[in-house]
Image: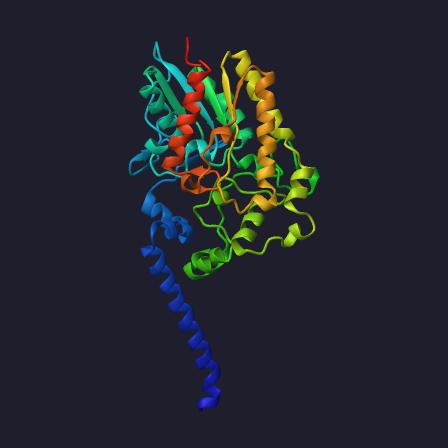
Amino acid sequence: MNLKNRRPLLIILAILGLLILAEVGARIYISNAPERSFNRFASFDQLTARYGIPPLDLHRNIGYTGNVEYVRGEDFHNSFGYRGEEFESEKPEGTFRIVALGGSATYSTGVEAFRHSYPYLLEAHLHKEGYSQVEVINAGLPGYTSWESLLNFNFRVLDLQPDLVIFYPDIEDVAARLVWPPEAYKADNSGYLDNITGYNPPWWDGSAALRFVLISLGVAEPHSDLAIQWRPRSDTSYELELLQQYTAHNYPAGIFENTSVKEMLAANPPLYFESNLRSMLASAEVNVVPFVLVGGVFAVPLRLDEAGYYAALQGHNEVLATLAKTNNGLYFDLAATWANEPGLYVEPMQFNEAGNQQLAGLIGQSIIENQLLNP
């Protein structure tokens, strides 16, 4: 075979060699990458090998709850699947039990140990102020909207005999409104979330190099992302597409070229957020459980502000304030007293330890000042 005839074969072999080198290089990089990069690019098998079992577990009614066997370093879940130390199912005599409800901000995904979470720090703050009989349970879970929190409250939290419940809604309730067309926006959240059936990896998923490139470009989601396994989005949900576009710096594209995020949010007002809260407060009234509703704050600067997230969150805060007033609850306007500094955040609504410390202190003082701990 002369050189001319061998050239196509040599080109093919060269390309194959480069692909093999890229694959080997990607695998070596991911295996030895810093934790943040490893979590972004690693496969499920790699994540499980390094960290053990995932923090969440399937639940037939709520979708998922905390995994009772979850342990990672100094962080763990108790036998109820909630983040933090064990507590007695039957409330001890003389104990004032507070339960914190919500999503990622309540669970405190921005910190690696439960002792840096806001509910744990709230308990420590109240003990320091002389209320040693107070026990605070962290019943928040990553990704929970008001829909999951309503079910969590009715079917899991009420059994714990809470003396006070704090509900701090998260950015997820805004994300749940990013569905299109408007007919897909429904009370059961089906326009936002699909059925949880487990993750079926695409054909290219076994390639570390392809996974690295596609995740870097914002085309694919990291395997550590909740959306992959625990919160699969419906075909009518555009939250992930929006986040991918912001990662790739090409917003507006796709559907958002014709329908902006602001238009989408305007067409899908927080009707079901309000409905979920009304149901939660009605159940609390029947069971004689006082409620504190906390208005959310955003990080500064916020890259999603121009897309309408801030205005949407403000609208949710107004719903909280109105419902607290009409249902004999307490509304705590966090934004009014919050020192909004970038150094308090990991993500737009996820606090680091300093942020959780500030959050716990402000909520704790509000509880004390409003005499909610008095028998």
